[in-house]
Length: 124
Image 1 (cartoon, rainbow, N blue to C red):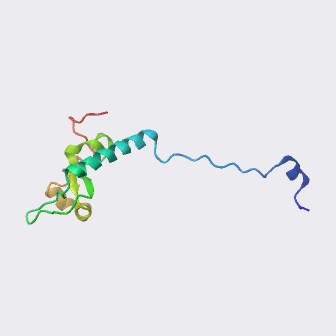
Image 2 (cartoon, rainbow, N blue to C red):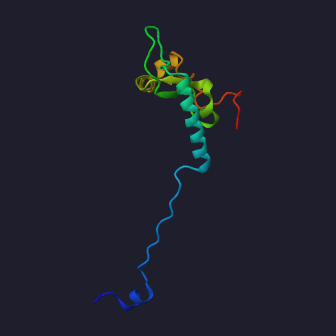
Image 3 (cartoon, helix red, strand yellow):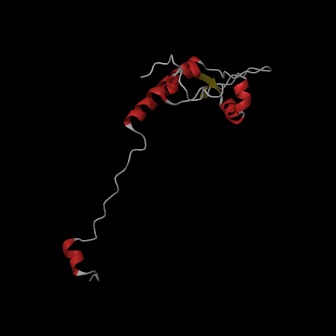
């Protein structure tokens, strides 16, 4: 026989636990933007199969694995292919770790323009 109080068994008090409501981590609108971006990125990689990294010494001939956003990803910049650069993983990491040199070589926009859309960008 159970040693629980009679009222627990009779009325079910304390036996029901409500599951917390799951909150979506990504909104429907952002999920749709991500899907559009991934489709466009796939096509961009097909059209640009070779890494676009080059400097005064050499040009990389590795396969494009990533898309470097030279001006940021906020708002309409995520889809603005004018600021996309096809890169291999090695050179994408190099750009991230050498920001000032990358900026001097034109792989990153000038200071003050990061995540700032052009006036000519189509604002959907």
